[in-house]
Length: 279
Image 1 (tube, helix red, strand yellow):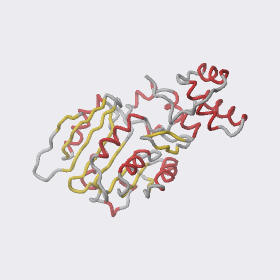
Image 2: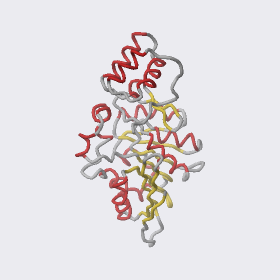
Image 3: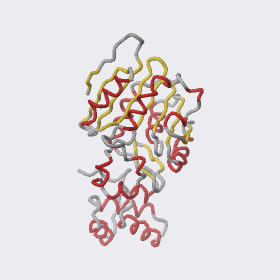
Image 4: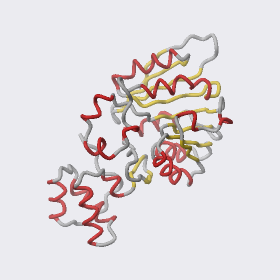
C-alpha cells in the first residue's frame, strides 16, 4: 500500500478538476495531494506549475520542498533522497541508545532527517552527519543547523573529523540497500528523481553496509552502536557482516513500519560475537 501524502493535510475544498488531473496521473491520494499543493502555491500560476511538476512524475516532497518525518518538517531539495516513513523505525531504535552528551553520527544522511529526528528526541546529543553527495550535504546542513548539528561531505568515515575517531557512541545509517539489478524495478519517482548513489547497494545491496562495518570498531567508542536499515531478506547476511568485523549484533523488526534494523555493538576483546533477534 502506498504511503499517504506527507504532513498534516490542510482542510477545505479543492477544485475537482485538479483532483481528477492528479488521479489521472496516477496519484493514489490525489485529493490530499491537491490540498497540499494548493496550500503551497503562492498564486494560480504557481499552483499550475506545482501541479504540472507532480503530473510529470516528480516526487511530491521535491515539489513541495519538504517531507514530514517523525513529526518534523524536513527540507528536501530536488534530486536529494526523500526520507521514507519506514526509516522512522531506525530513529526509534537509536533513540533508546542516545543520552545527553552522546556523540551521534547520521551516516549516509541524505537530507539529515534521521539526525534531526534524534536531536528532537534528545536535544543534548553532539550531532554530526555525513554524505558523499554535496547536494544532500547542503540540504542536511540547513536541517541540522537548528539543532546544533553539522554535516560533512565525503565518503563514509573519511568525511568525519579525525578527532571523532574512537569517540562515537551511536552511528545511524540509512545506507543504500537496493540490489543493483532491482533498481530498474523501482517506482519512477525514486528511479528517475533520486540520486542513484542513495539507492544502489551493489550486487546484494550490502556493499555500503560492509564498508560501514569494516571501520566501525575504529570509530565507535567502547560499547558504541552501529545501526543500519536493511531489507528483511538481508538481515541474516548483515549480521554475518557485523560478526566478521568483531561486533555483536541484534536484528529489530517492525511490522508497523515494515522495517528492519540491524544493530552492531563493539564488544570487549576476547568476547565472541553473538547474533540475536529482537522485535
